[in-house]
Amino acid sequence: MAAEALEGVKTLTFDVQGTCVDFYRPIMRMGEALNRAKGIAVDWARLSAEWRDLYRRTLDEVIAGQRPWIRVDAIYRQALDVLLERHALSGRFSIAERDELNTVWTKLDAWPDSVAGLDRLGRKYVTSTLSNAGMAAVVAVVRHAGLPFDAVLTAELARSYKPAPAVYQLAVDYLGYRPDQIMMVACHKYDLKAARAFGMRTAFVARPQEFGPDARPDVSPEPWFDVHAGSFTELADRLGA
Image 1 (cartoon, rainbow, N blue to C red):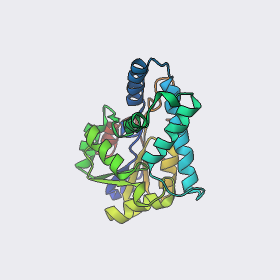
Image 2: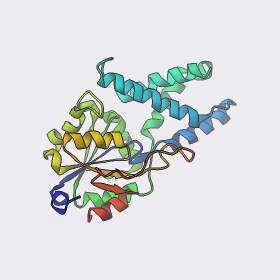
Image 3: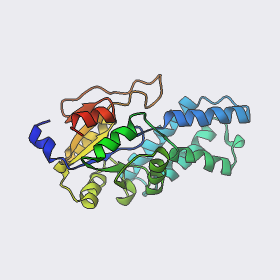
C-alpha cells in the first residue's frame, strides 16, 4: 500500500462474525452440553457448517431479490428448524429450546488478539462494525466480547447484505468519509473484493481457525489486498497504531 494512500485512511470498518469473534467454539461448547443433557450424539461441527451454509444461501437470495429482506437472527432461526428436521431431531427440541439455542450467535468469543488490537487501532482511527448480522445481534456480540468499537453499523440499516454495495455505502453515509478514506477489515475475501470494488481500502486478517481445527479456509495473500495480517495486533503494527 502506498504511503500516501495509507495516510489517507481515517476509519476502519470490521466484519464481525469470524473476523472479530469466534463462532465455532461457542457452538461446539453449546452442542456438547446439549448432547450430554439430551443423551444425543449430534456432530455439531458438521451441523454448524450446514447452519452457516443455509444462512449464506438465504443472504444471497435476498441480495438477488429472490425473497424479501429478513434479519439474520430470523435466518439462523429458520435454518435451525431445517437442520433439526434434516437430522431427525425435531422431536428433541421444543420451540423455546430452539429459540435459546439460536441465541448462541449473540454470545460469541473474541479472538485472543481482538480487544487489544481494536484498542490500539481505535487510538488512531474511527472504528466501526460493518456486519451482515442485525443491529441488536451485533450490539449483543460487541458487549459480550468486550469489543471497543466507536460505532455499530450493520446491513440491517440498508436492508440488504454484503457484498451488495448498499452495505458499504452505510460507512460513507454514517461515518462521513469517502470510500478511499475507509479501510474494510475482514477474514473473508468476498467481503474485501466487494469493498475494493466500492472504492475502499482493504485489510485481510487471517483466521485459519474460523471453521474449526479441521477446516482449511483460504488465508493466502492476494496482490490486491492493501494489508495482509495474521491478527488485529499485527494489523495495528502495520498501520502504525
